[in-house]
Image (cartoon, rainbow, N blue to C red; front, side, top):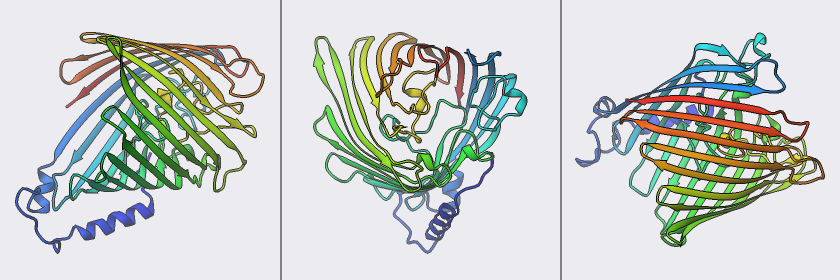
Length: 414
């Protein structure tokens, strides 16, 4: 991994630095530090440690993967000065004891091809580096390398489950001055993917526009319209135009509350994409919560057209379609995912179980398979956390293999 940032983003940063010069009129007391040096020195520093052991047993490999990795994250946020602030974050991912795994996309040596992929490569990464201007509570601007998490990250997210996070180089604007309305827009020049900038799969140049508008319909319901125009210079198949509408809210049901989510979208090829297609997306789910219990059911469909499946190249994919990660790319025949979830909390533990049934969205081929996911997690005091997870995918199609994954994760924040 390296520290390269898009030239265009760097130019914006230089411009912003010039704007920060002392020629800007001084503001009244109470609006942040009175000088730049004080703003920098009086900031907030954080240290985060995340250890994870991941086991993978996949039928297509003779050997199982055993990955033991540790992520050290250091970040620093300055105090505000004339409504400006800065943020920097570094990540270091290292192997600890067990390294019998392939970290994927050319990040491992050839002798590790005998193991399944665990996409947590070694390396040091400049995860975030941005300047922020926030003149009031209604709007803010960020310039530089930043985390972008939209809605539940189904289309745009940070891939936070992996040790090396996905971040974005660009300019982002957020405005909340309209009544019950929030507007987010970002122009992206580069996506820093989880494999790091040392390999082609980890660094994708972009000419991408993201627009997300959320309108509150009532205290319990809101509607989101989104337009994601992705022009990927380095991986043409990811170039797509996606337009969608999302509605979510809640109603009282019995002694609990039912949360409802509906999402529809259309997607077509864009820019330099190698194939023409026009595919649909649909999701409907309900989740009923009563005291410590949560019960949910949902259906998600990623469509297909002209042999091309609906794409979500900027999504946090691990959170959807099963934790075994068998559908990081949508199959050519699309994907239908019917799922059930149950959750239970008994302090200090939280438990979750899910069942997925996967099938093609179009065509007469066999079902893809089914999956059971289980997790148990708890806090250990104020600073520490423990998470245990298991995913078991049972293949029904020769295009997939039976796969079992298990995780033990420990976190600490200071």
